[in-house]
Image (cartoon, rainbow, N blue to C red):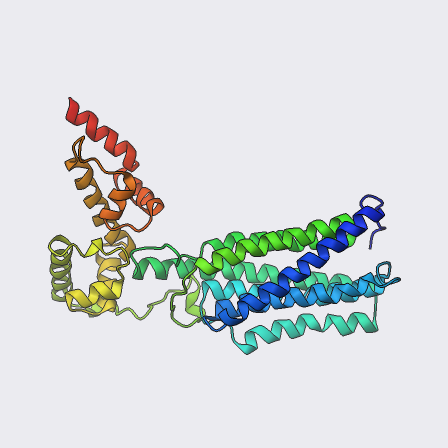
Amino acid sequence: MSDILEFGMGPTWEAVAHFVHGGVTVFFIVWSWLLWPLRKQSNMMFMLFLNMLYFAFCNVKDLIFLVDGYWESLYWSGISVTIDLLYVPIVSNFFIEVVSPGWVNKRRLLVPMAFQALFVPLFIIFPTETVYNIAIASAYLGGVVAFILVCFLMVRHRRFIRDNYSYTEHIDATWSINCVILMFLCLTLYMLAFTNETWLSGAVFQLMCVGAWLYLYTLSRRHSVVNLPPFTIFAFPWVKQGNGHVEEESVTPDVYESIAAHLEACMTEKKLYLNPRLTLQDAATEIGTNRTYLSNYLNNVLNMTFYEYINNYRVSEACIIIDSADAESRKTMFEIAEMSGFNSISTFNRAFAKVTGFTPTQYAVRQRQDVSK
C-alpha cells in the first residue's frame, strides 16, 4: 500500500472522521431497522435490507480502528478490506434481482459470497500484497460480470414491460443501470481511499456511501416489481425465444382477423386505451382471446409492442383534444395527458413527439396558428 498522505491527517480531521463514521454507522443501523418489516414485500426489498445490514456490520467492525495501534496496522487494514469486499456479491445480487425478479435464491447469493469470503482467512494466514490484490481483483471481476448481466437482463425486462404494459412508470427498472455505475464509482473511490488513506478521504467516502444509498433507497421504494418468466438462457437478447408465444405459422389468418376486428372495436368504441394502467391481459380478456395470440398479432402482424400500440391511440386522442379546444376551453398539457390515458407527463411528451414529430406544445401552437389564418 502507498504511504499515508499528510493532507487530512491532523487532529481536527481525525475528530471529523470519527464523528462522520459514528453518524454513518447509526445511519445504516437505523435504516436496517426500518427495512426489517419491509424485507418480506419482495426479494428486491429483502436484498436492500441485507445490503443495509451488511454496511452496518462493516461500519461497526471498523470501530476497532479507534483502538491505538490498529489504524496504522496494514495487517488489520487488509483484513478489514477483504471483509468489506463481500458487499460486492451482495450488491450485485440486489441489482440483478431488480431487473430479473425471482433471481435471488440461496445458491446464487451464497456461492459468490463464499468465494469472496475465502480471501479473509487466506489473508489472515498469508498477509501478503499478492493475496490482497487478488481479493480486490476478484471483487472487481465479480462486479463487472454482474454489470454485464444486469445490462443484458435489462433488455429482457424492458421488452417484457413494453409487450405487456401500456405504461412504464414505476415498473421500468432502467434506473438500476445508473445505480450500478454509481456503485462502481463508490467501489473505485473505496479502493483509492484505502490505498492513500487519510482521515479526510475516509470521511468523504463514508458520506458518499450514505448519499448513494439514500438515492438507491428512494428509487427502490418507488419501484413496483413485475412478475417476469423465470430466468433462463432465453433471457439473453441474442437467443431466439418464444416467451410462450405460438409460432406465427400455427395461427390461421382467421384468428388474426378476428383479433384485429375485436381490438379495433374496443379501441374506437370503448376507448380501452383511456385506462392509464391497461395491460395486455386486460385487453386480451376484453376482446375474448388470450394474451399469447394478442401479443403475437401485435408483434408479428403490426410489428409493434403493446406499449406502442396503445400509446398511438392515446396520442391520437390528445391530438383530437388539442384540435377541438378553443381559447376558452383550452387545457393544460398535464390535463390533456391525463384525459388521453397517460399517467405521466414525461411519457406523454415522449410518445407524442415520436408519433407526430412535434412536442405537444409545438403541436398546439401550430394548430392555433392554422386556425387563426
